[in-house]
Amino acid sequence: MAHTTQDLSRWALLSIAAAAVTIALKMTAWLVTGSVGLLSDAAESVVNLVAAVVAFIALKVAARPADANHNFGHQKSEYFSAIIEGTCIAIAAVVIIVSAAERLMNPKDIESAGIGLLISVVAALINGAAAWALIRAGRRHRSVTLEADGKHLATDVWTTAGILVAIALVAITGWNILDPIVAIAVAVNILFVGGGLVGRAAAGLMDSALPDEQRAAIDAVLDEFGTPEVTFHDVRTRESGHVRFVQMHMLVPGDWTVQRAHDLAEQVEARLEAVVDDLIPTIHVEPIGDPRAYEQWRLEENI
Image (tube, rainbow, N blue to C red; front, side, top):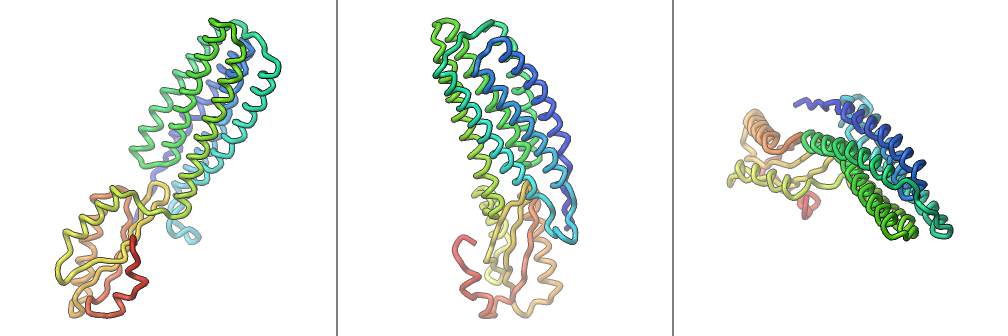
């Protein structure tokens, strides 16, 4: 059955717009207050913009149909966007730490804290709305790129919240050292986000098996069709972007006609596609009485 990939790049445009607006707002807040925490927050928004542009390109590539050079499609391009995003996040974190370290050595008063807080709240609300929309779209369309981009924006919201608390505490207590300390904490948080995205992308590039929930759904379907004379083994799964793959051997009586075995395989594939979204199944039919169907390499555990 032919499989088409929907073009989800329009959602990345929402992320690009949100990042561009929040960069302008946060840079204004930094210029008004002189807070290194707000500067670090603005730097993270620059990362968001770069990531959104990369996501847009990756989603455009992922939507391309399979061709002579990419027989299984282009969905893995989404993982490359996550790796690039993770790298950008690490760079931003280093910049933040360097800036904060300098401010630790040379503390500076924060000016016009109230105006800075107001501007940052507006930026956080914009990011929050965009993050909510992207995460919902990512889960609905099973796009690792959209969901990762949304979660990144959501993290940016929490980062902004932490910095706003720091500015408020500085304004109340007069302890200017809180500003760079929070900025460093923000940088550490950013590093964790980047590491998580790179790890998830690496797992996808390594053809990790489907999660237990989907594998259980597949096994349940095979149990429905399994009989004393029809069995399944060598079940292997992998995920490529939002598309899932499963391949297996179906053992049937050797005296079955090709047509009968083919018809049953078609039924099993249709049922699998119905219970697991975006699944592309492949079934190889073998005679149940042939010893070669039970060679050890076919029966390795967990496949």
